[in-house]
Image 1: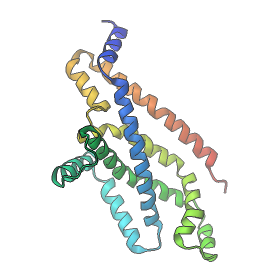
Image 2 (image 1 turned 60 degrees about the vertical axis):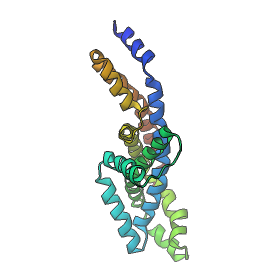
Image 3 (image 1 turned 180 degrees about the horizontal axis):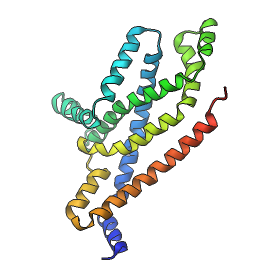
Length: 228
């Protein structure tokens, strides 16, 4: 078979596009979870309460330095295997949710640090002015500090999203058998003579997914940059 016949054979016998769609869904739901949890952690890190600062720092330090594979494996073996906690009756959906939670828990630490870097771009005088007019911490954070922090953190948040897209392949260790790394492993197992081509197909696929995210976040970071 020539190159085009090999590509046609692989795409007709394996659901390559479908596997990328699974990873996109994993990324989407995990990104929402990571953004919510990461914002809460960032609030804790910049709060005036030392106990909340310590709790936020502990979470970030522990999770950021723990391999994602271990987090997802512990979620499946510990929460599902030992505690018998399930999120859905459907076997595949249950592990899909476990993988999303594991990805969100891991990347929330990076979202937190990205937002904290954005908070550092907000002039100290604005926070002091908010306190001077009597705004409590949460109100000042919601109305004054974090809107500007998000604008300053677009680029690092984009980098975190790109890492999340690529790390979604780790969901394979959480028994999500329809995502890209699982499909790629199956393809290689039964088509050992096309290893290079299979790697190239998935590499190109991830480039197609990642490059637009980088372009959009870079453009947004320039447009939303606050002039000082």
